[in-house]
Length: 397
Figure 1 (cartoon, rainbow, N blue to C red):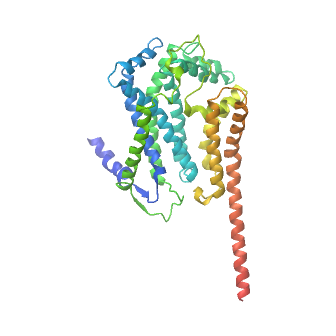
Figure 2: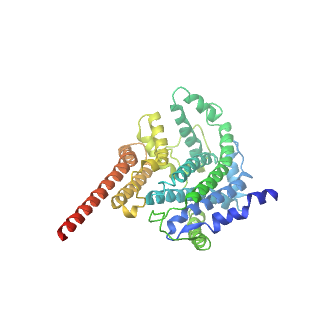
Figure 3: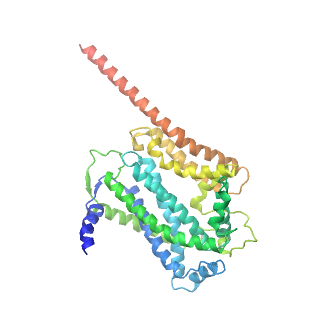
């Protein structure tokens, strides 16, 4: 009790959840951070209960998953909530990221909030990948084999690192045990980073649709935005329920309902849908090391957006040219996701290469150039306004 008195938990909860000053003009696009936290809690709870019945052994893993589905009370519900919950988690996170891109939430003074969020996103990708291996179906085995083999592209030490990841000379029992341990651990690391993410955010305050920190009225988070968040949660739960109860397998791959067989290679090895844009970038480079570097860079470049950004204007509501470019990058990501699920053949290879090239041009060249161009237009307009005022003053005199 003495520890709780020193920490003053009640004061912390009040400052960050109840009395936290929130811009009055926030709309439902700001709900997705809260929805992401609810998805994380759901994944942890269902994951703990699934781990009670799962067996991390290559001879028993697939059977234990089937046992959960068929014999454990409400096991099918736990499995479907957890499996589809990963997709829902990525839907909320992608929406959260693209909202930040649209309203400039990554700019100063929230650059550390954004960087912390990208680190969480990277850790989510790792957690989701190793979780996809655990059912030990065909796509689990071969997906793990393909992705872990990418590490062999590292000069000199690549093969040694791959052998260390595998715990042997192929994806086998040691690999499955390691992945299960990491998959159980990583969500708790994400929770810790999420608390840091929120704490940093509350130091600088939330962004708003206008991108203006001053002259925006603020009200306490409770009850106004808490009610708005829970209304969004109810709607999101209804959307989630459609997949759980009516289309539980639509977001998965049919080959993963076949027990893993190292002697039979699937016709088309693909990751889960939320990895497909990055997988398309990986495949677009004909050299393994180049493809791996570009795939990693495609994520890491997002963390440098606060420094790539070249204008003081945050919100796209005051940047009509940026709004056009924003929807082009949305389209580009959708094309990459589509290409990532297609066979490695023409014309998909060419389309993927063009889309990958545009992805990097957008962030490295177009964003900084657009900011500088907008500053030039603003300064030109300001100079013209000063000139007009001087002419008007001279005419009156």
